[in-house]
Image (cartoon, rainbow, N blue to C red; front, side, top):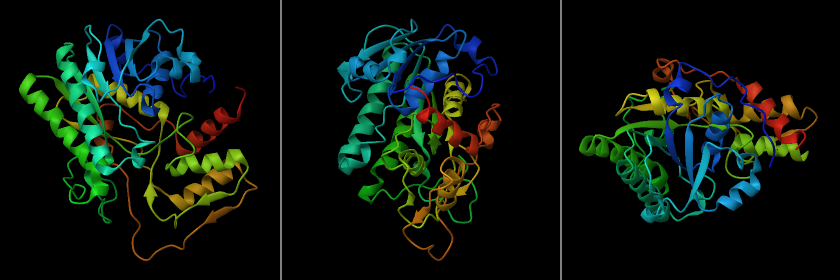
Length: 337
């Protein structure tokens, strides 16, 4: 728990404040990493929209993040996104569905994970239709593309690869792809404008440090004064977008993304996991060694890097470079509380 400063970059871009100043936004997943990033983004705005967040426990969330307790534009509805009866009454202009559990999700059985994602998406879409919302933003995943071809430097939205649907381990990515199709069906059947954000990898002080996110693990190692540990070979190539940029992009896509289309959300600046570990060490723990568990394998490394040309056409940019993102994350997590 910590009190954050305003986002690293000012929150006023391209008229978004004016476009959503009178909006009423309903957010599922508003207490998770994506949701808190959005709440902090809106907090820094001169005219935040009215926002209602679906949460299992308002008291538990505010007990951990008391900085959100006294915001007159923020309200809460208690419930579970997988239960249709959890959604409140009232009218909303926009719905953001970001409620896919990324931290405990990998501990679920594949069939549980698939059902959770699909039930949550259909409930959120049905609610958007019932409450009169005109726009719906789904936070999907770059995992919908399946394995990125080794000769494809950055994967564009037009690439029609997909995860293997016959592998139980593909449950998350297959469910995300099916959720995107469900959005298209609701737009076709009911006229609900749906936009898909295919999200890649991120960094920021709200990112958990003790789960399966490599950059969070490395920053956590540095904070604890431990060696920086790479549990594999460190060969895979990844890229990281700071959570302040993430929130700006999602907010902008909610308003200005073309209905019926998907947009990659992430940085296009590739770095290997091994080099990332050394970069974290060099920036925030210069006296700690980096330990890599496995040697580099033969052949080209796996890639998970988005092409963000389409997002750039909307005026979106990577404003916070990786080094600045790592430094600011470390400083916020180790500074005065």
